Length: 397
Image (cartoon, rainbow, N blue to C red; front, side):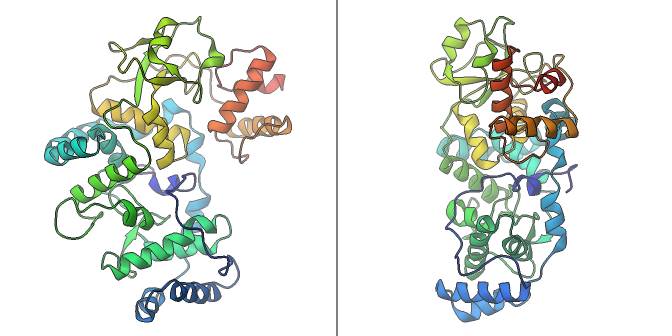
């Protein structure tokens, strides 16, 4: 994983990845990789691909152990929001974001007009995924997809992407020997999987092809089209920093507990930098590090970020960075309680799981499921129910 430039490869380990057709049960995972390749070739023929294309596509495929190692490395998501954001957001990325906004102003104007997606949103993804196209990954795409399809951890997620890559090959938009990208098979400046390219790719520069590796218009417009397909609501906000009163009922905060913005205002919630937008829309109060840390109002478009990626800390950071690129100030960090170290977080997840809560994997990552379980236990124990785990909660459990 190359965190200093982008974290998209690791994202796929947690991402929902746009829906694709289920993998054929006739191609089991595991076993001999050679036998697996033969079974995938046979499945491709059954799906109607011509034999010459199938033979050429699979002829040089190799298993890549580095892909599996990258897939298992997810420690970065154990960082709290403030640390994660400070690590990914730099002045250099802000400056280059502003330069790219100017350079591709006409493209962003078209995107905002046709798709209703703000330029800050796409610039933030572009920055985090590939450092504005500078670091797109050097893993052979077909080898990566075949390796992850053969691995029994999540074969149904990646196997359809192999056949999507084969389709791109028949269209002249992928070279099995030379196309490279992220370890999880994503391609291009905004890191899209082959299936997403087929469904949402846009020829933004009018050359007759969708070239996400070399064409910024293609990449940006394809990303906007995918966000719209995932449910992005045109010309609506996604995240706004707020100031919350200490009298707020913390149990009413968190995702999935939305109320109208005007109702939050009636409870004393205020915009940190001016009036809150879209007062009639539903929104949730988001406290990434509890009641003493940063505070945001998350609008319906914030939920779309989780369709792009499942990591809470990544989503919140990407959404916040998008607001920075559009002029928002640096967030107020506050003085939150220290984050639990990995061992204690895993112990907390085990205790929550033992009490019947669904926390997903015991991975030491404070994701949405763990946050919801923490908040429920805080309510039961009479603690401030802000969904931020503390040593006191761990000891009480």
